[in-house]
Amino acid sequence: MRIRYKKWARPELEACKFYINNPEGLKGKWKEKFQNPNLPFYLELGCGKGQFMAKLASENLNINYLAIDLVDAMLGLAKRNIEQAYNDNNIEPNNILITRFDIERILLILDKKDKVERIYINFCNPWPRGKHRKKRLTHSIQLEKYKQFLAKNGEIYFKTDDDDLFEASIVYLRDSGFEIVRKTYNLHEEPIFEKNIETEHEKMFSEQGIKIKALIAKLI
Image 1 (cartoon, rainbow, N blue to C red):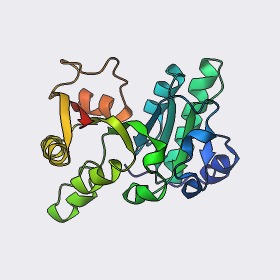
Image 2: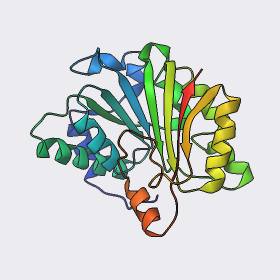
Image 3: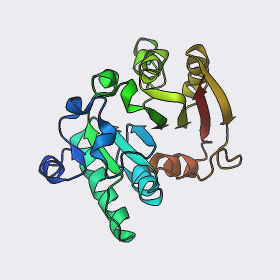
């Protein structure tokens, strides 16, 4: 998703206590940045405007979360949405961090010491052209990177509107040593998550009559 430049985003992020400006310095040490470092550690790749993460993290204070995106404007909106969700619940955002980084280079900021137990990938760019498919966040190239910091039996929760991306992702996951634990071609008719938090894209595509595909994969 493209978004207009927002001049307020960078200053607000730099002043935000849960924004990490230099994530490379926390490689292998992410849990130390949370108020309770002993909680499970979950990750969202491509958090966009942050509505999903805002609701997820504010309703699950027993888990620490890191949300990553590459665009300041997106992260600025995510920061505001997270603050709003926590304010609505009269709690402090002590179990959430956000940072700006290129996910293709994710091994520069995460390693096996971080022990990520779950990765969320929601409605990522499908990169339909053949020469660009290696950029997919679910491509085997990326999956091999995630395996370097996923904990034993670590999971990937994936949602998309794109049929080709979904079918290809199933192959990528299996070829990379993941087991497809659950999958559905119509998430809203066949729920596979304990609680499905609807994203902005999910709502938009569903209103257009597009079925939402989803899966849970476990590293074996």
